[in-house]
Length: 119
Image (cartoon, rainbow, N blue to C red):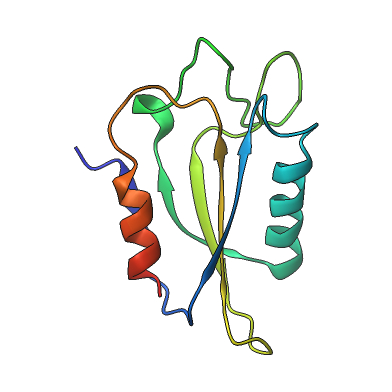
């Protein structure tokens, strides 16, 4: 089964991957807030996502797509890939935002191959 849903493959220049994973290791949501800020500031474009059903450990944290912040909710339902072209820089940016509590599900090899395809 293909867990990676690709909307488009952007043509980027030596993209740098900036990732943040919501959950216990997010230091008070510092990492996810920073990546969300970059995504909003840059008006980054979503180009792919991973359905977290096979990867996310729902017994450790419950995704909260509405971002209400109640309980052990992460605010992220699945991995989202966004990109932004930085015309005044020599590299473009890939953003990855997703939950930290991954189960022992299928390999995340699609993530690394997607990064290679985008630049």
